[in-house]
Length: 196
Ligand SMILES: Nc1ncnc2c1ncn2[C@@H]1O[C@H](COP(=O)(O)OP(=O)(O)OP(=O)(O)O)[C@@H](O)[C@H]1O
Ligand SMILES: Nc1nc2c(ncn2[C@@H]2O[C@H](COP(=O)(O)O)[C@@H](O)[C@H]2O)c(=O)[nH]1
Image (cartoon, rainbow, N blue to C red; front, side):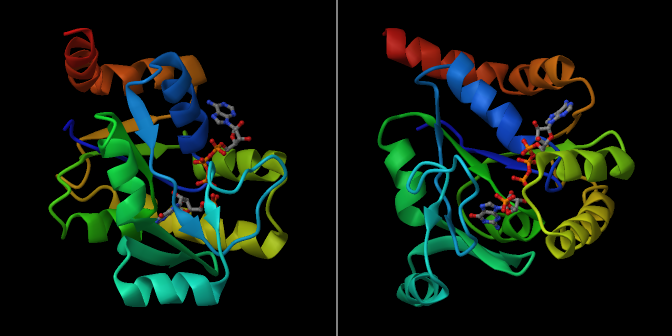
């Protein structure tokens, strides 16, 4: 099947915004890998669509059973990509998109998934902070943890070869055009195979 895509980058950089657009714009081409998390759902988030919302005990049982390709603790909550989440997308011959943090990127690199790695960056840490504050989803404590992780991860993402593309999400239209451009060959291949 087509190569999966890993979308990473600091919390608040715009990954979900960009990937939702990609899913809508290229209908049937991409499928989202629905992660598990122990964090509480935000208003508007649906269980099984945005995440599988689980307790710590359920998540730990899944990890112990070997259900996860990768898992990490981010801002005090557990997150993980299950084998079933990726297989569900791949079974439809779609490009599987994983929205994961830097620990996830490092762990996926140790597997045989062989995805395309894309990092979404904010234009500045100040803009990132403003976007996170405006999103109104985080407590002050969670926001500070996310900003600290962002500063660390932006430094790590300078490592040569870690990402196939880095997209600065300043103007949304421009960032979306660049994201779609970075994936144009994969999109065309899936569209061609669907037509034939
Ligand atoms: N180019 C942009 N210009 C202005 N605001 C933006 C832009 N892109 C995204 N946003 C806004 O910034 C906020 C963070 O975006 P989003 O939730 O997509 O980030 P994220 O990287 O998915 O974060 P997380 O990792 O926490 O899920 C949202 O409120 C979104 O509407
Ligand atoms: N390593 C993983 N990271 C994940 C996964 N699913 C989401 N994430 C990352 O967590 C943070 C926070 O997400 P939020 O929805 O609480 O804002 C963000 O960087 C996501 O990319 C996963 O399965 N594994």
